[in-house]
Length: 564
Image (cartoon, rainbow, N blue to C red):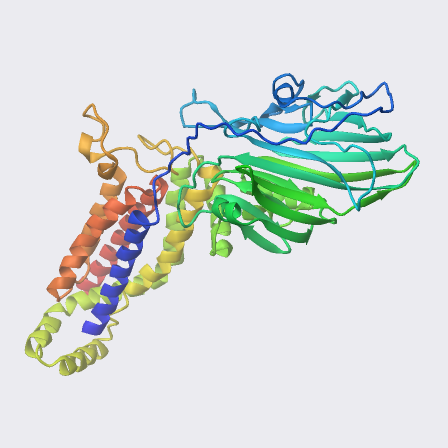
C-alpha cells in the first residue's frame, strides 16, 4: 500500500516541481530592449558609369544614405491583409502593416507593424540583388542603392496589379523585376536578366532579411523565437545569441529561411529546385538571413529568369499548409512551434478550429473538446473511478492493518496486497487517467499558446483573450477596488474556480493514510491555483470544466456502487 501511495505522491510532487520550475526559473518576464544608439547600415554604393539609354530606365547613380531613406519614391502595397510600401531605390521591402491584427484587443489599438525602415533603431527589411560569380566582369550589379524605374501603367502593388521594375547596368545588361502579391502574405519576385553585352556573364541571385534589435525573447522553453528555417530536410531553430558568436552556413536544395516571433514570420523561399547557400550572421549589430543561388550563365542575347518568394505576415496554420502546394515550399507549417508532440498537437489544433467555426466561440469550442476527451476516455476513467470507490470503501480495513503492522513494513505490505487481491482493487488505478491526460493537457497548452488563431479570441464576461491569463485579481476584489493588483497577486476568478474544483475532487477521493502525504495533497490545489493564474485563460477553462465533468462521473459511479 505504502509503495503505491508513494508512487502517487511522487507523481504529484513531480508535477509540482515541473510547474514550479517553469514558473520561477524558465519564465522570465518579457522585456523590450531599448537602445539609444541608432545603427547605420553599411550600403555598398554602386559607382555610376556610362550606361545604355532606354525609355524604360535611367543610369544608376550613387545615392547618399540619407537620400536613399528620406527622398526615395515608394511603391504602395494594398490588400485585404497587408498595407505598406516598397522603397523604389533598391526595391527594398521595409514597410508592412498587418491589417487584420492589432497590438491589443482594443479596436482602437494600432495595427501590427512587421517591417520598418532598415536604418531605424528597430529596422526590419527584405532586400535582394545579383552578384557576379567566378570573378566575372559583368559591371555594376543591382543592390540597395539601385535606382529602379517602374515599367508599365501599374504603380501600386495589389493582388490584381503586379508592378514591374527595370534597370540597366553599365554593360548593357537589363534587369527586370516583376513583383506580385497574393491575397494573404506571400510576395512573388520574378527576376529576368537580358544580356545585351557581347560577353557571357555568370550571375547569382541573392536575397536577404536584415533585422536590428529584435525584441527580447519571452523566455518560454516551449516557444522558439529567433532565426528559423527548413533546409537539408531539417528544421533549423537558432538563437540571436548564437549568431552573435558564430555564423551559420549551409548548402541546400530549396527550403526556406527567416526570423520568427511568437505569431509573426518573415521568410525567404528560394526556387525549390535550385541549389542555394544559406547564411545566418550578425553584422554591425544587425542579424541577417540570406540565400545565394547557384550561378546562372547568361550568353549574349539570352534571357534568364529566377523566381523566389517573400513571406511577411501572420503564422496562420491552414494558410502555411496551403503554400506547400501553391509555391512548392515544404514543411512551411513548422514555422508554428508545435514542438515534440507535433503529431498530436497539430491534429488537436484542427479539431479545435473546426469546433470554433461550428460553435462560433473559442471558449465553447474548448468546452466541447473537453467533452470529446471525456467520451474518448470514458471506459478507462469509469474503471479507475470504480477502483477508487472500492478503495475508499476499504479505508477502515486498510487503517486497521496499518495499525496492527505499523512496526513491520514487510508484513504490512503483504497484508495490504492480500487485501487488494481479495477485493480485486488496484490501488494505482486512479493514476492512469491523470497520466493519460498529461500529454493532452500539454498539447492543448501548446495550441493555445502558439497559435495566432487563438490570439485575442474572446470568451464570455471578462475574458477578452483566451490566449492571455485571466485579467482579474482577488487582491482588488476582481476590479471593484480602484487600483491594479501587483503581478504576484494577479490570481483571477477562473484560477480560483479551478482550485476549488481540485479541493472538492480531493474530498471525493480516498484520503492518504500518511499525514505528510495528506498535507502535501492539501497544498497542491493552492500551488496549482497560483501557477495556473499565469497560464492562458483558455487552458484554465479547460482544466476547470474537465474537473467538473470528472466529479460528476465519479459521483455517479460512486453512488451506484454504494447502492449495490
